[in-house]
Figure 1: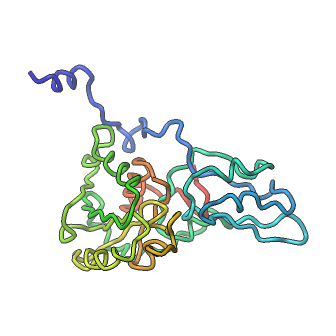
Figure 2 (figure 1 turned 180 degrees about the vertical axis):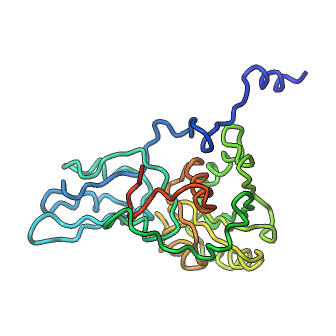
Figure 3 (figure 1 turned 135 degrees about the horizontal axis):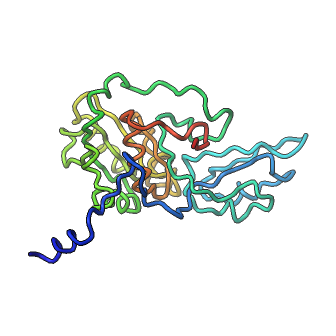
Length: 269
């Protein structure tokens, strides 16, 4: 008997029962997106905005009191520099990692986080894909951080195939085009060709802050500000990189098998 077979029999199943049943999602102790409480901001303070490398934080000055804090989680690279710079506790660390959304506006901290959800593109066509989804991944200039997390989806712990979700080598067999990286100018045409080769209905997912908004490299000499400049995006998942559990939640949320938890820049329990 091969040693790996004996090892498996001795240790039992390695695959987590999550998300179908209670179990570990593998993200215990994870440092996620920072949380913000603008009411704690000191008057005239903009240290968090000044420290942000991607301009995800802006402070609108108000002569009557502290400035209004605006946060775009679609630009956040989870560097925690804002947490380190804030002297008033308005920016604090959190374990919030499940920021998959259908609307780009839900990544912006504003108003009521439980506003009515915007209708999804081709939502009526997703019913036939809820138990089986095929994904074509295209690297459009990534640093390979997102790719390392994507690879973990097929390890024994996450075992993505058990959920009926598969990666395919050809866009002609794909339902969802998953794009990582800030989209370099040389990758624009290959992306369009991959999208046009997909059968209808077809959807597009931006994975990682680079694909959502351009990230650190956005607007540079070699790339655009993310995927929206090139293709219509149906699913956004920021993070640098987003972890495998966040990707699984985003896939299942897209297929209406899990609720969307992030609304208005806030994560619902």
